[in-house]
Image (cartoon, rainbow, N blue to C red; front, side, top):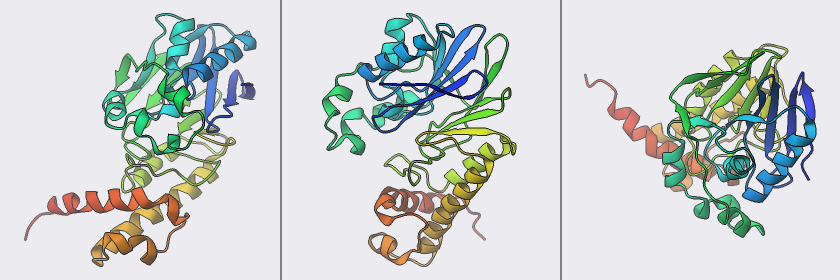
Length: 280
């Protein structure tokens, strides 16, 4: 069961009971802009039914905030209900989806609904952009921004200047600590969140990828903690702490069992960064 709740003028958010993913519906004179579509074809169909129950029009366009299965496998259900509906995403989403296929996603390893996700057809974005795009919704518009890599390499946030809402995807998490997966960019994430924070006002309603709506103060606090992760990794590398000891030696703002990929990815990236420094 999917129920949309209005969080701002003609902006509704529903939380899927599977992975607690937030799905956002934005009303306009041209119909509904749907941001993320759930973790499977079946979930996507439930979302389509819930959108229709709003009585605010057909789905006009879809945006995927990144490539992870729980945010985009419902795309096929939306296209099934609304043939030809454009799906927007970052230009690297298809590459990232191929590099990290659904079958290998750790979040599905022991999930009782794993087969449901694996049986869902792919429906990748057919409208892609590199850094910024604008969607004309008639009486309002949406800005699509790729602030840089962070939670993944293809993160997108959706900014609605009116009524001051930002849909942040998994760059911001409220239901638990930020998720560092095998495709995360722990050293870049703080800078990407700096750009996101610059889009916010004290009154902005921020819709995280998972959990309840938050505000600019929450995002700034989480950015500081994500910054601590990045700087801790840099410090450990500079002190020549072996990768295998990093989690034990470091002082972390989040539980260490969720930082395994962050540390490994950070260690992998830093030697490359050091080679960019001028030799004197």
